Length: 189
Image 1 (cartoon, rainbow, N blue to C red):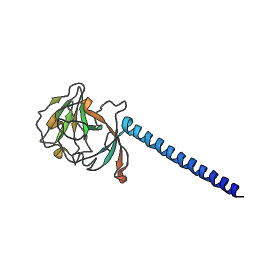
Image 2 (cartoon, rainbow, N blue to C red):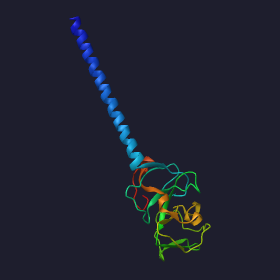
Image 3 (cartoon, rainbow, N blue to C red):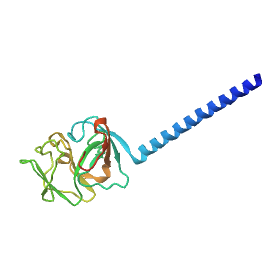
Image 4 (cartoon, rainbow, N blue to C red):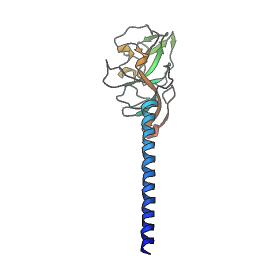
């Protein structure tokens, strides 16, 4: 009887160890997959500052991707510009290579190739000029970016057109705040 009890106890201990091992193995695999996905496919970025108000706010958390990505007008992107900023910044692409940007600061209207942009995503019209002069032709391989909070944004009006190689990726998903969680289209919402 005692040998039977010991055998049952050993069997239960072995089952418990196997189950624990299975759980640990599953957890390690899941964490590895998450690390691979967020290292090579997607990146998590924390929005800092108010230059993209009202589309994105300080402390929003977004997911970006650069897989097969070619910068397009209207996309919200994250840029690495270490010569100007210590951390990546989030901006909207206003124009790409081959296009011309002009801004009428009296009316606050932005033009691309002579056509006024419809910009329902901006906080207010563009009245601050920055250091660059307009019209500005965007060279191939470059982009012109602006924040949606135009009068409180340091962007291509200040630092000029940006080499597309500095685009870390397009914002594809908002994770936080939870009441705004979801996919992001080119309109920002």
